[in-house]
Image 1 (cartoon, chains in turn green, cyan):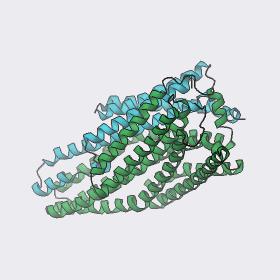
Image 2 (tube, chains in turn red, cyan):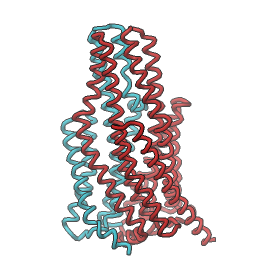
Image 3 (cartoon, rainbow over the protein chains, first blue to last red):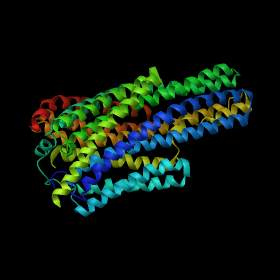
Image 4 (cartoon, one colour):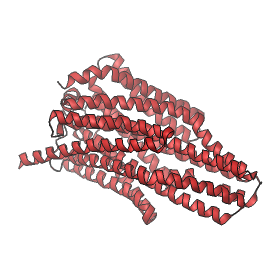
Length: 348
Length: 166
């Protein structure tokens, strides 16, 4: 059993690391599509239909009300399934990269670890595609996503089992870490990644307090107030309240996204730190791409949060910085693919 | 893999596994309803008002739908935060050798990180089970503990990051 990620052909760590990077990149592309083409558009249409609900309800027009709710339900499902796919694909990418780092310590035969890595790949794709396709092709695909989730549970469970006798495996932790952090870009990414995680967690704690004490009660108060005013035939007042309801819902979702994106980008930077030595580029270019990822990773969550105050102008910048991270990530993936090609070439 | 590295990785994987299993059971229990759909599921309330006007019977429906919406939010929080704390622990396990583990202060920091990472999602589970006040207190303690321990680890590891690989 190797003491570091060996990246040999048919190696579980290689499958997990490369698929992890592709999943993260795929999740980010899906996130950009979600933000630009679905979320912004769906929010506006859903908001307009909520105003229509109040109007139809005030006139006692049940058929019209049901039509508005059909549009809201359809768009909410489309938005929910797409966001679910985006966040899960990126999270599976992070998890694959984490599992790649754990592989040297898993006390199982290489063939079993390789099969587990393929099962992880298959389970992730089944889960994500099952959820995404279910919106277009029916609920049957949700059960396919459950099978994917069960496969992932199995992989993590067996990996945990494989760690039970791993005390003596591998290099001493300090030597292993020293080998991971040899490139300057690795050390830069560790420092910036930890800082971003710390900032994201601190912001999360602040926002959790704000959420439970102010924002969440305000959301449910707004919908209750809209219904009360409507029952009292105050349609104009009900429209104002339902607009506040949607505004508060968006504010909560966007702020939570700023928190989670900061932490996930921090994870990504730490993970990228551990694989820099497999990025077959010069030190200067490794550092440039590390800084590119870092700039995007720090500024994207800030711009996402600013979208609660400045709307689509800030959201456009968050999309831009998402693109910056993607460019840096793609450059690193290119360097890793070069490395694996070189390793295979040497073996032949 | 020895000591803190092993503890961090094993507790991290257990948290990830717990987050997966909780979410799978929850999604079965709500028949895979998307969280964002739950937030907009007030149709019965407005239909009731359209039919019955000033009648107050819609209030029970509204409270029930809001309760389900909060439950969906908390369930998603348990799922996401368990997995994220698990990933964080595994990554920090790899970085644990950056600090001198013979130092009792460093050991306390590492222990705090492990405990806080478990306490935080446990608090969210309590909130999901509608033990709201206790859950909020437990999760706040877990989150604050994790942040303080991570900040202390970050400060202590700062110089070691520059020297370990050179």
